[in-house]
Amino acid sequence: MIRRAALGRSLGVILPCGSDPRDRDDAIAAAKGADLPYLELDLTEQRKILYHGIASALSSRGMPLSKNPLVWGNLAARLRMTALYGIANHLNYLVVGTDNAAELFTGYFTKYGDGGVDLIPLAHWSKRDVFAAGKYLGVPASVLAKAPSAGLFSGQTDEGEMGVDYDAIDDLLAGKPVPIEKKETIMKLHESSGHKRRLPATPEE
Image (tube, rainbow, N blue to C red; front, top):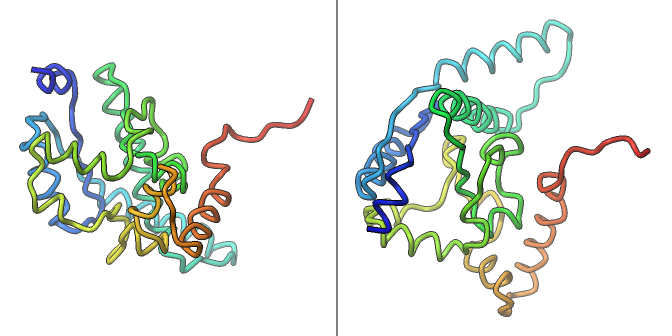
């Protein structure tokens, strides 16, 4: 009954953006498992057009093009944010973020991408809490067993990109002992991502 009340006013949005087709299948399975209504909007072509338009504009001025895969990856996250707000505006809905405590602490989200939301209900949940909730809500075991990934570029995984595992981050946030090298990595991520958790800087009065 609680689950029906919570999800009855919600809408899942699946936004393929040059993504692995298996991610789409898993998203649909997760939505169906949780009895969550959903719609799908493919942003693959829009991503290509915008990326190549930016590259062309820079090249025409002799400016360098970065080979960092995050240029391509973050473009997907920001296109998705734009699409979500477009849908929310039509329905008079709020955009709900999925970031959890571990992701917020390390800054593992795209600024003005998946970080651009109205509400972050999982902000104080550990990654372990998220998996437990997924199991309770009926998310298929095959989805829960996948390595966490934003799917922003081929082969990308959260833990591989961060250089530290979620268990260590959860333990640190819970005040449990963590190997020193992992703690240093986590704190470095936290410190370097501080700008993501603050409002944009303004001139001092």
